[in-house]
Length: 80
Image (cartoon, rainbow, N blue to C red; front, top):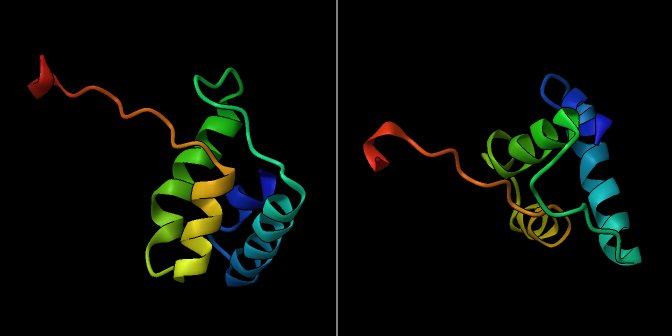
């Protein structure tokens, strides 16, 4: 998941991350489900399900959905 944090700024890291997600999917590796006790893991999952997918190929979107459980939405004050 460290690579996902690096992918925020470098295009090469985004390509590497796609390959890592494909390898994880091929071997059956899935991140643990939330709630996350590791804040870096939580930030990585939020990035992968958020900004990383902007403009990502459909195959990449599918890999993220298969290998990274979606982090819970934060409640907003309008929901109360």
